[in-house]
Image (cartoon, rainbow, N blue to C red; front, top):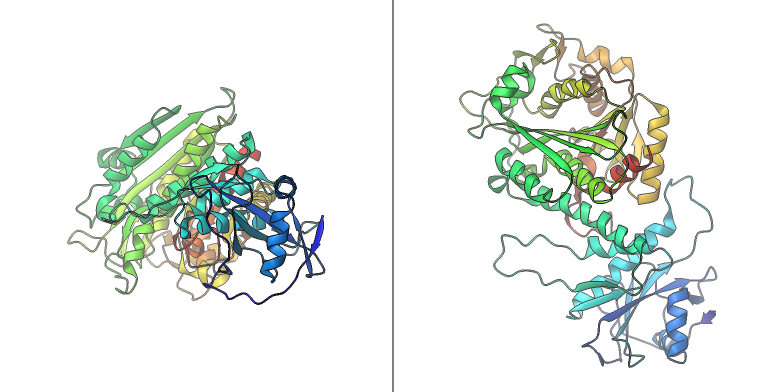
Length: 505
């Protein structure tokens, strides 16, 4: 049903496109109902979703009438209170879905319709919260999974260490389904990664991270082994241990496994960078925004959240997740620029910058990953500021030795709205990392430029897997408005893309 709009004057409120309303919150003891409005291509009319149209018919067209009375077009991601329209429902909040896109936008490489649903569901649940209502009931917007993802990720905040907790409304589906439940699970997985990334470093040391993971995996078919420094030394992980040398907190190495596939099927191995706080070591970082380095374990957080979701979904895959955990501190025993260490695979590394530490701990973890005879290996790390310069917050930088595997990852990012962009993994960069006067490799390039590419080339020297992917997530570590359904703070990206990848590889 296509409906035109009248245009009486109506004052505006707030910066998110919400408007004040003449309508009351009658039946506010009932869950607020969030329904979708699609803008027509002409921009002078709108269409309700199929669910919205059904409810509109139940209330004799009151929803469409009130939308017309409020005048202006409801833009994508905006919300509007319509008040109570039927005694069986609470107050109605209409949210804009924008224009429908009939085809996938290949230039943008993203499913814009699914992103619109996530944004609309998020706008609706935030409006419910702003109105002080205790419960929001969200319709499917014809894509229950995406709606549940958006609503779940929007309905989250990190208030663990605040006396006044941020009250969040309860979240209900208008029509519960397997797709809705799956979307809640996927959104919840990303929220778990966000929570781990937000934890202050004194509350999430390597030891405490391991304890958090054990608690999160309770009741799931996941085997967890927590390795200590003695084990790392016995494995000759000199590169990993060099980063931990300056910290009073002992390192840990998490080894987690899930066996959902056939017994003889090689596992997918995920490796996550677990630097629970990064000062830069002797190559000390500037103090400005150093507190954000509590999230330098974003790789560890996302692979952990991915494993939990895979286990909860009971996916038919075998997985191993490896997480080297340490702080990077400038203590009296800290590694010094110019020091040479020997990695697990026997290669020597000249450490000219102790702030390029993530690649050092991943090097030994990648070598260890080879021992599982993996189907593929994917490491995830907040590795370089250079990837933020290259891509900003638009996408995760991805490096791959297999074009086919990358295509699967790319398709996963398109579906989840959390894109990846392939970066070059050329011998040009490998040669730069081998220009070391003292060792086989240098941990930084002595030539400027291409910092993310040279870091990836360094890591490639420590895996023998023919199917290896490296995700540099430093650019997407934090959300400052780029993704409207996430809000501010640590993003947990690209957890849902990784889950989709593991499911479809």
